[in-house]
Length: 255
Image (tube, rainbow, N blue to C red):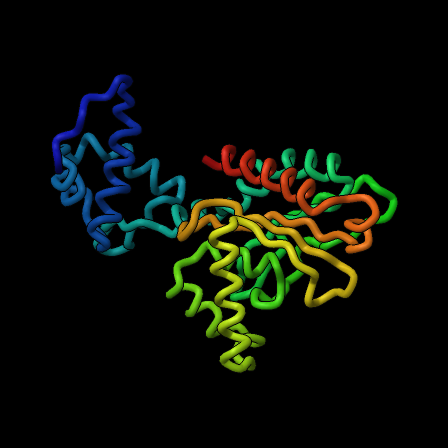
């Protein structure tokens, strides 16, 4: 085992338990108490209590015959209990609430799921009349402002792979496909998109990307509003400015 850097605070029991888990993970095969001890430069008696504890807590499994230890699926289960998107929803809620109150419009947060856009969070408008995009709703990536904005966060190769599985995109001719690609490049340069909805008449969508490009945490923050509101009450520039302020705050909170 490589020599470890000195720690400011020592937790010997915890160190032993983590050494066991990390060693078994690296080896990937069942090992005896003596083999584990040798692998982490400990004596069998030093790790006995750790092995018993880890087995009782469900992190290790032991064979009935040879008595060798292996990792259970508990670590995997724990790592998938709360995804990065759960944390994103949590930190984004207050900034989205502020955005909704300032603009008097509903706003929603979406991610990609099974090559579609999935709405994972929504804040309702405080106004009596507004648009609502319900959580759990799926939309086609290629047909929505949020979907195109999300695609702008991926590399050209990744976009190509995603669009190849898009049921709408596959039916288009080359000219229409190229128009979409150019629009996505434009979004990548501008850092936002606003356009009339292709799915709902009389609605204008505004969207900005959330997270880091080409990372595991890509999302889109959007406002969908009645186009008539833009003519009578709101200006695109004002809504977009407030949307980008919220974007910066959420990105700051997720690091």
